[in-house]
Length: 251
Image (cartoon, rainbow, N blue to C red; front, side, top):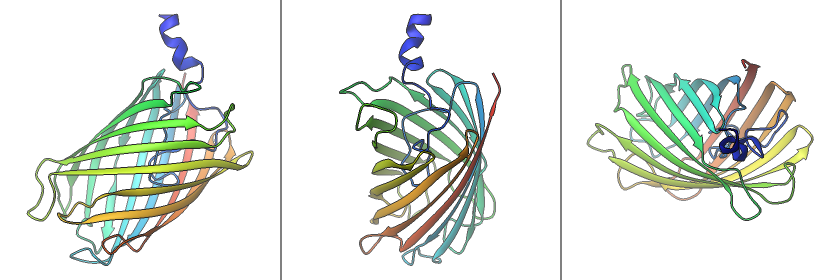
């Protein structure tokens, strides 16, 4: 039992102070392959504004997503969330209840990145009621140097599946993103990424370039912010992200 946990305990979890820890939209869309620290409960709030003149109903969308994360076991993170969207876009005026699980298969080695799978399920509610959705995300993270302070490269491969899509929506949506994170101080990381893939509406794709920062005020409190711009005719013009994270030791 102890031997089977060694790959996770060595090089696993997140360091107490690790500004390069990335969650989805904290501070950019790309996330890393590492789970919340074992025994930690993390409260996370993310706000996101998107302006997309190509949306069929309106250009502006505000997303608010509170999330509770638990480092349940070595390599395993459990989340619950309650997102809500407002604004003029077709995805506005609806909320949801979500559960998701992140499982990391290995710690990185000199040649192999850390690999993880993140699985989501979200059930919607509200006036803008949409389809329930499943998401699978394959994640790879590799340190580009010998220590945890080295820059890191992150790859996300995403598959979204809508149970009951509208007449204008895809059943399935594929997307990929690539990010580079680097420390600019002991407690602050700079992150850039590129996201490319299908939009929810049929025959539409998007490419977004983002830059953001994550600053750890102390070992249990962090603030993040990011901005993104679209590239190409069908991409959103702009999006902005703000996030706050607070963690507590449970066991």
